[in-house]
Length: 133
Length: 203
Image 1 (cartoon, rainbow over the protein chains, first blue to last red):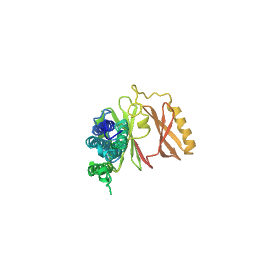
Image 2 (image 1 turned 180 degrees about the vertical axis):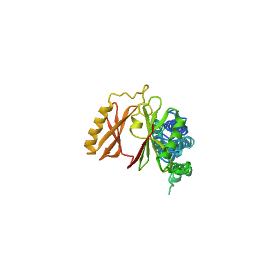
Image 3 (image 1 turned 60 degrees about the horizontal axis):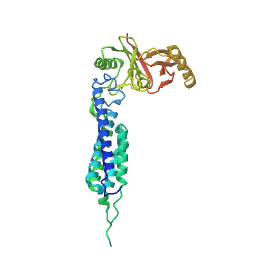
Image 4 (image 1 turned 90 degrees about the vertical axis):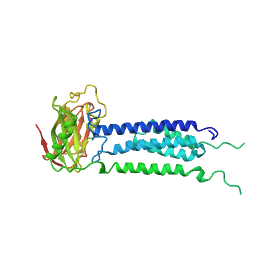
């Protein structure tokens, strides 16, 4: 892949991955909050249960779901910046890769999102400068 | 001397460094705060009566069909058996953190084997009639105890959807409890309760 080409593959994979991270993190967080209030799809059985850790109704799992959301946002920022500044592909590749790996803590965009992000970040890092004419 | 074509600053610009650092700080803060009790006022639970009151309050939000059948006080928390009034079948098990008053859906068999209220392998038609009978479950449990905690005995099994839970005792004193899967006869020892203090059953 050359810098003469826009790093389209890396950008697209990262955007999809980031979006999935935000989606999964948001879904998980909403489910936790909803269940915590006792109105969840399981009638709240999960609310203060599996997902909410002892002593913290906000819950460790809730925190991790937000980690997924934040990671997704940062992966998308990385992808957008990569699109505008392909010359800085190494830096934005590291950003995408780092937050894609971190997103594994928070469901990782149903897992596939994190994997796409990692691949996108690796593609961005592997871009080669165009050969001088 | 010719200047290098790319400097470190070009390769890793300030904007990317900023996103990386701020992002990592935000994530570290989120993980830290999720352990902290700042989002909820804590209520210390000192006795079974207080535990019952809190759990009743919680169950009333879930369904009028639930009632507290039994509360066991352990050094780590209160353990609660919740029963369905309409069927008389034990529905699920809860833990109540004595320091904060937070109710926790008990991990282990209650989550993994409960075919009606659990999170794994829920059935469309959950039943408490299982291939492994209560008697067989007791025998499997006793076999496990003989191997792992010699001298310990199983008490009367409590039937849940998908599994049985029974107290264990030694020299007439309750030690803890274990569960037996009603389909696979697997045994799961509850090693998270701590030391047994007292038990109250409710009619």
